[in-house]
Length: 170
Image 1 (cartoon, helix red, strand yellow):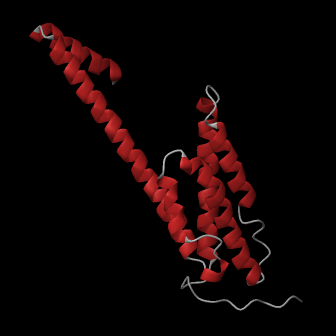
Image 2: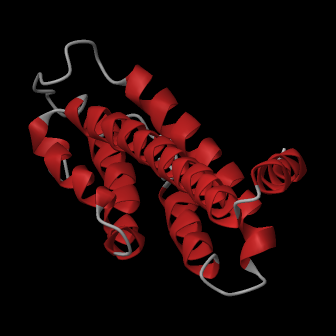
């Protein structure tokens, strides 16, 4: 696709005899691609924040380790790398608190270890040359983590914000 675009701009320059017009066309197309990529990335990030927020909203308020609205701070560039160390483990801790209160011990750590691993992998993505390989690992771990959170969200009692009476130990 990039080669055909270069040929098109080259053709414009040869046929019109105006290098400035070809350069302007190239820069306009390049800017359009950059803006489109930014908007797609922002839409994906918004969808991710919405999903994480809905996971927290599904839990009774007394089990939430973080307010659902705080997830949206993940939209702040560069700050989101640090904030992910707070968001993902706290969501896992919230699920753990809920399931412990109803006596369900089969859920393990509710993805806390996976959440911390994801945050560390994201930090490794900042290392030059390593980021080309590790970005795929981070995407896979993120997908696994989101599936885990989605599964746990589906196991939370219907109605979301109800209060659960803890089961006494046997």
